[in-house]
Length: 418
Image (cartoon, rainbow, N blue to C red; front, top):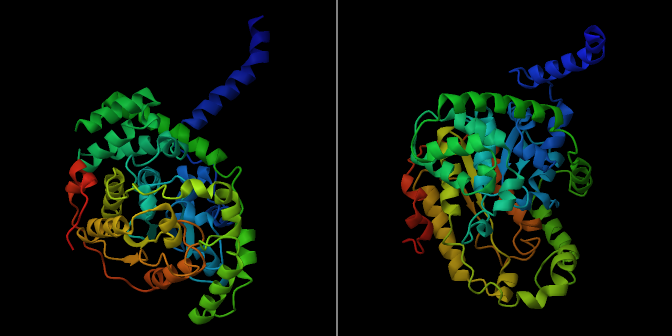
């Protein structure tokens, strides 16, 4: 009887044991093809952003350059970085890391999965003023792009407690995601208190990380969006040779053609879909908004510390806000200038000097595609800094990191002396 039962259930049990052994093994389970890497570079898919294997595989090739940001990357137009590099066959390919809701904290933790591939590399980082609201990163948005693999990898790499470690642990504990796993939560509390994680926690995290890595290897390329066709169609509209004057004329023409149904210079489809029926509600709606006081400044410091520790050289893009729309909503121009001074001070005082500051271009026609995102002429202007930064030799950065930027005093500081 026992023999019959074994013959029936034995193969199933053996298969289950083999699967478990495989899932917890330290070995990689698949290999990413060049086609998958190219698709992922412009996919803007959550599973790519929060996963490891695809980014790790792509960024091991020097042609892929990480572009960090948020929803501006999903607005493909004639001067979008991915369109220009496709059309003019540049030596680099933007690997887009950003979707609606991604902010500094998301980027900090997702970078933990590819630190080896980012070391000594160049990158581009788009800073959205809209991240810097009073409450900082939205918890639901952070959770959407978070994986326990990120925190497990981060915890296992901590060798000594620093201001960066303590702040990052506390911020993650403020998120429901950070408390979803009991062992990870307890480990985070130890780091937040300046302590080392226990041997038990370390052992658990090793096996948890292996399991999550194998899940990522098996499923990360499923349901990945394919934006390359859209990019190729837009690229065909561009002149064969890169001439700034010709491209700017085309940007003006396309901007004019696509902003005919409103007085704000906003893309027709965006205006109809998002603003037309409720435009009156936005009149003076942003009178009391501020981007100067926010925990995002300290979250951003985590990213800067990560760049510095990896010796990365980064070009920062500071986009403007659509000035016609901000005048309608009452968003203060004085406040926006104060934000610009504050974020530039945080960057430059620590040695981050590659800054493309477009914050004063909000009134330039067809510079913005909608209320807050770069458009036809905006991306073209950004390209005048991005392309030479990535293609020409740059001075080696010298960073002097300052832990004061993790303080609540800095988060709440309103004015910066020129």
